[in-house]
Every structure is written in C-alpha cells, then in structure tokens.
Image (cartoon, rainbow, N blue to C red):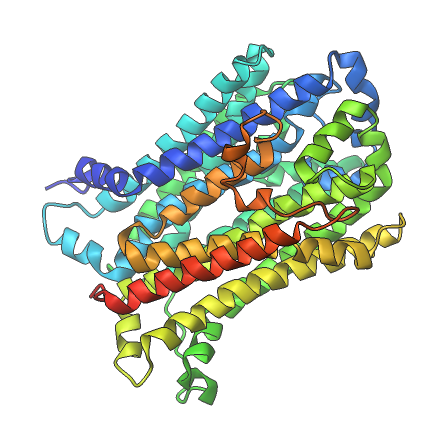
Length: 529
C-alpha cells in the first residue's frame, strides 16, 4: 500500500460532505465580484467620469489600508477595489476551513483513526483535503473571471482578478496544511492559520500606507502578492508563479511534519493544564466562556480596528461619492435616508453586521463540535440539563455578536467624530440596530443543530445567500420577495433615518422562534456518540 492510497476515495467523501457549502460559498464569491463590477459600470459611464472618485480613493490612507491601492483610475479599477482584498480574504478563509475540517477536525473527533485502519495511506487525508481546497480555489478564480467577462470589461483584467483569488487561496491552503501538523486541537490549528492570515493583512496594510522603501514590505505578505496582481492595472498574472512555488514549499514542510508526529497528536506537545480548575469551570456557562473567550478577544480587536478605519474614511466620503449615481447606490444599500455620510456608514455597518453574524454562527457551531467529540456527552452525564448546556453556548454566541456591533459602533463613532459631525451618539445605535438580523442567523444555526445536526454547517451557506441578497439584491433590481428573504433587508435606515420598528421586532420574534424550535428538537433527539 502506498502512502497516497485512498486519496481519491477520501476526496470524493470530502466533496460528498461539503458539496453544498462549497457550491454556495463559491457562488457567493462569484456573485460578489460580478455584482460589484456591474454596479460600478452602471454608476460611471466612462473612465473620465470615474476620475474624480478615483483620485479621492487614492488620497485616503484609511481606504488604502482597508482595501489596498486602486489598481487603476478607471471604471474597471474601481469595480474591483473591494473585491481584490475582500475576495482574497474570503477565498483564503474558505481554503482554511476546508483543509482544517478534513484533517485536524477529523483527527480530533477520532474518525480519521477509523479510516486509517482501512486501505488508507499516511498522506491520503492531507492530500485529499489539499486537493479539495485547491480545486475550490481554482474554481472560484475561474468563475469570477468568467463572470466579469460577462460585464464586457477587459479579458486580461478579468483573469487577473481570478489570479488574485488563486494566489491568496493556494497559499492559505498550504499554510493551513502546516498549521494542522503543529497542534493537536482544531482550535489551536485555527488560531495558528488565522493568525498568519491576520499578520499577512497587517503587513500588507502597513506597506500600502507607508512611503519609500516601506512599501516593499508588501512582498512579505501573500495578501500583498495577491494585491500586486493589480487587475485592470498592471495585470501581473505572473505572480501566480511565486504563489505556486510557496504553496509547494509549504506543502513539502507539512508532509515532513506529518511523518514526525503520531496520529491524533501535534508536533507541539499540548500544554498541561493546572492541577485544579477554577470554580467557574464547574458551571456550563463558565466552561463555554473558557472555550470561547480567546475567539471573542480576537474578533473584538479586529472590529475595533475596522471601526477606526471606517470612521477615518468619513473625511473623504464627499469626494469618493461625488456623483448622484454613487449616492443613489449607497442609499439603496443602507436604507435610503439621511445625508451622504449617513448612507456611507449605513452601508458599512450592514456589511460589518454580516461579520458579526459569522462570529455568532461559528460560536453556535461549537455545540456541534463538542457533541461530535464526545465532550458534550460527558457534560450532560452530570446534573447539567440539555437546556443549560445549550443556553451557555447560545448566550455567548448572541451576546458576543451584539458586543462586536457595539465595539465597531463606538470605534467608528470616535474616529468619525474627529473629522465630521457624526459620532458615537449616531453610530452606536445604528450598529446595534443590526443586531436582530444577526440574532436571526444565530437562531437558524441552532435550528439546524437541533433538527438536522449533520447539516449544521449549512448555516454558512444560508449566510452566503443573505450576503448576496443584502449586498447586491437592490443593485441588481431583484424582486421584493427575494430581498425580503434576507433579515438584513428589514433594518430601516440608521444612521440619519428611522429604524424599522416593526421589522426589528419581527426579526427578534423570528430569532426567538427558530431558536426555541431548535432547542426543543435538540432535547428530543439522541446525541451523536
């Protein structure tokens, strides 16, 4: 038996398990690329019309730090400004999730040990996971490029955007392959891989806002490589080559580390805990908080930084959105009332609410991982009821999501207050007004966990659909019933307008109902043991 025996079978199994999530995620990324370009082409009839807005984007350091430099002062360049960095991050995260799920998560849950008892080589699980992630990344890049071609823009630039996603996704695939060899836990592997991704973003942002030789720091970040492809600008398609080389080298390192560790363990020894645990760990909430606090801290730091960056962009909003068409686009995406600055903040806060929903979903899905690993059964063997165990994780998922919204509202308000008349008093309520939509996403996750636990991760596909409807539904003139499927379509218009009181109350009722149904279903079903 060779070390790669069974790779094809494991690849088919991985695809069978994740095909709907992969398809939904890829389609969401492709729709984002297409929607952004199509909307921009509608706003600017020519490159000359886009020139003034482009100059304001170039001159704003906060915008550059967040999205990177403008590829070119053209309509197509503006159309991919957000897609380059946001698409890179999203593709990288998708690759990370697939590799970790089919390697370290399988080992931690004990399923890989059962597979290894059959005709499965030592390298096969890692090879299958890397193959699935790589094919997904390549498919995302190709379909994104083809979707842009449908808008009539330059073909070379279109394939350059596909190369951007391929560069980021392939390198992140290999980074995750190394991370899962280093630690024995899914959470530890995730911390390492996401830490590398965060560091790559910080290095890239620092380089983009630096002057002189400091700009060369971008070459130390694989997100910097993706950015420097510069679709509809320099079109450096050759940057795929160093990305492939780096991917191959990292995969070679991952393979070497794989043969230096035992199945189920990591290269780094697990740190022993204290001889006696804290008293608070004797309660379901205390244990859930201990498991989730590191993740919430990382998200809090990230949201505080994003809030400050977005708040600082307030000084340039008038120059960036200097045409009636751009203003109309912002109003459609934010609810439609208030000043231009209000419309800008409304749009950005809704986008960040989607991120808060992602945190809530990931936190709620910890219930499923705890159940699969058998730790949930151990907890429930004590006098802890199913409801208390469920509620402990649900409270952290819901309250943590609302906390992130409060953090970004305060941070954006503080930064914006120094350059405009909009401050914390306006942005904090606007951020918190998106909480009901976020809680609906958390409630739907619990519903899936209770009713069809094996499909719990489909919550990510549901969020992807909400993103497409919320971000681009109005711009693409989708019918009202389709837009109404997204909870983010019922929020009203804050800041600058009025909240949709009936819609917000309705969303809270929906969130409570789906969570109650999910909790009831969980109490009536058997545990996965």
